[in-house]
Length: 467
Image (cartoon, rainbow, N blue to C red):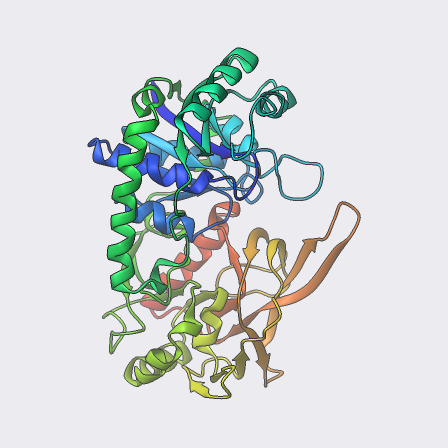
């Protein structure tokens, strides 16, 4: 069996890779194809733009957080029924997680899923020098299949024709086309874009599609994207137990404030027997009925603190349910929602759910960010002491705990370079809730999702005790 798949990679950040990817995704969609988008790495903001364009949930492919078999599994189970899958790369083609490694890079993921690569090159101000530049990328790893180039910020039709001849003669790669200098699409959090800007975004995408149809050979990309499925090294690891007899219902916070999720995390909960019920902390007055667990993802909550505070009925409902032992997992900046209050930069305090005995502020300086290794040092609702998992940390807020009774669950390690790393404690356990700034990938250790499901079922059958 074959799958149509292609990676849109960049020479470096800022070369126009995202604009090219969005244009190709939108054009394929307009052509009537069922397009499955993917994003290399941890980025869950760009994936929202992918989903907005194609109508399909974009998935993250992260070869640092996940092992090779898992990357293959998540790719193929989501790609198999699509007409074509498009993978957007991250950073430069060979830029991995850490120094002197391609692990986690666009090249690494593309090799794992055996997707041919199209390289986006910023052609502004370049002529013949573009050829040795491109050859450097193709020569660096002969096992990576780079099938062609798309040029960005081309100055004129004549400029494009001269570059096309030079590249095809000098590198043997196909030049699929180009984009002229254009206004970049906004790649910010869609939840922060007002409705009038959403309308403007749709207009910009239509204009981008018109340009792509004129200057990029999308039909040839489709033709050259057909590749065989990848064989698993160990397929049995994905044969999970059948759904539990006592199925469980988990409420997931999802709206403009809460939407930083790895979609495959939620799918894994479903595979393991959970019914997912979405709710909005911004507008819903109560949690969904008969829920056995809660899941809060991250997001840009600091833009919606006033609205969240005003929904007092839901805040009280959440406080009561969690205090009574409802199994809960919260990650990223959702910790703001669960603390007592948020101290904003305008010196105004916003009252939140009050489950965590502490407060959050939003410092001007950046918080810790990047990939992390996590060791569990205290049993909690998701994991047992000694378990390990990988994740990513990116948040705007800082939390200040006011009680010594809330214990840390995680020992977290982040590499600074090949020789040095920093460690700190994180993750808070209270009642039957785990709250952590680290956003973990359940597929890095599926036992975390399994224990969460198990505790939700125990809560449903009244077998769980409040911690």
